[in-house]
Image 1 (cartoon, each protein chain N blue to C red):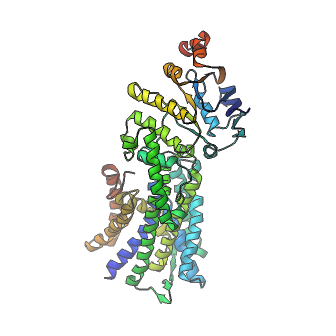
Image 2: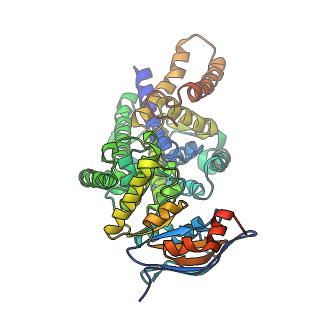
Image 3: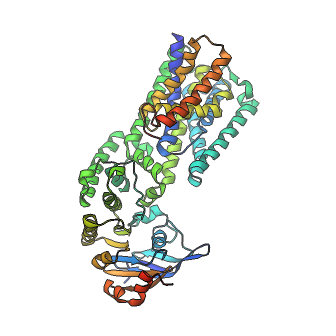
Length: 287
Length: 254
C-alpha cells in the first residue's frame, strides 16, 4: 500500500514541476534545462526553515515559492537577450552553477551528504507523516497547479504566450510587451517549482543534490516530452509514466546497480524515440 | 497645419551601407500613400524607423504632432500606428480568430493574475472579444475561416489576415509592407478593394508597393525612394510620367 501511495505522492509533486517546465519550454518556448535547480532551491529553503526556525509549514512553502519566483525571473531573463539555442547553453550554465552550490555549501545544504531529518508537514495541528496522509497534500498541490495552468491557458494570457513562442517580433508589433509576458510566465513557473520543492523535501524528509542536478532537469524534460508538451493532460501523464518505470524495474529481479543504469538508459531511449517518432508525446502537441 | 505623419531627416547606416539618407516626407490624413523605389531603396527600413523597431542614427518621426522618437514598438501601436510585415509573420499555429484577438488591445486576463483570480470576468470579456474578432474578420472577408489554423489558409487569405490583425489594434495609420505581392487575379482585386474601403472608413494608409498598376489604381500620393533618399513626391501620374524615375525603377540605373 505504501509502495503505491509513495509513488502517487511523488508523481503528483513531479506533475507540479512538470507544469512549471511545460509552461516555460512547451508554451513560451524558453528552453530551460535548469528547472531542477529552481526546484532544489525551493526544497532546500523549506527544509532549512522547518529545521532551523519555527516557521509554520504553509508559510515555508509560500516563502519557497516567493524565492523561486524571484530566482526563476532572474534565470529566465537572459532569454530576452539570447534566443533559442543560445539560451539552452546559458541555462545549462545556471544548472551547473546551482549543482555546485548545492554540493559545496555544506553550512546551508549539508553538501553532498544532504539534509536528513526534514520535519513532516504540520497543518491545522495535524502532522502529515504517513504517505497516505501526505498524498492528500500533494493531491491538493497538484490540483491547484493544474487549475492555475488550465485557467491561464484558456485566458488571453495563454494565447499571448503561444504567440510569443511563434514570433516575438510580431507580438511587439501588435502593441504587446514581450518582456512583461515572459516575466509573468517565469514567475508562475517559479511558483510551481518552488512549492513542488517544498512538498518534496517534507515528503522524503531527506534531500541531497542528486535530486536537483542536470540529470533531474533532463528527467523533467523527458516527462514533458513523453507526456506531451503544451497540454495539461501531457504534463499530468508524463510524471506518472516515467516514475512508474523504476517501480516496474524494482519488480523485476535484477541487482540494484544494474537497475539504476537501466533506468538512465531507458530515459535516454524514451527521449530519442519520442522525439523521432512521436514528438507530440502521449497527450500533447508537437514540440 | 501639422502633418499627420512627419518624417524629418532620417539617417541610418548599417556598416558601410547608408540605408537612409536625409529622408524627409509627410503623410496627409485620410490618404493612401504609396512608397515605391527599387529593391534596397530603404522602404522597409523606413517602416522599421517609424514603428520603433529600429532607432535611426539621426532624424525624427512625429505623429499628429507627437514625437515618436525613442518609442518602443508597443508604444507606437498605442499611438495609433500599426504595421504589417513583408514576410507576414502571422502566428501559424493559431487560428485566424486567435491572430486577430492577439491584435486587440486591453484584454482582461492577458496577465496571470486576472486569469487566475478573476476567471469568470476573464471568460466573459473574452467571449465578447471573440465575437468582435469575428466582425474584424468579416471586414476582410474571412469570417468563414475564423477557426482555421493559419497554416491551412491560402496565401491570399493570409495576406488579408495580416491586415485584419492590425485593424484589430484599432490603429488609424496603417503601414502595409507589400500587401499585394505574390497575389494575382481575384485575390489582388480583393486586396485593392479592401484598401480603398479602409480609406473610405477614415484610415490613412502608407503602402510599400512594387506593382505600378496597383500604385496607379490606389495611390493618392506617391513617395519615390532611391538609396534611402526621397527622390520625388507627387501624384501617381506625375511620378510615372517622369522618365528619370522610370529609368531608375525599371532600368536599375545607379
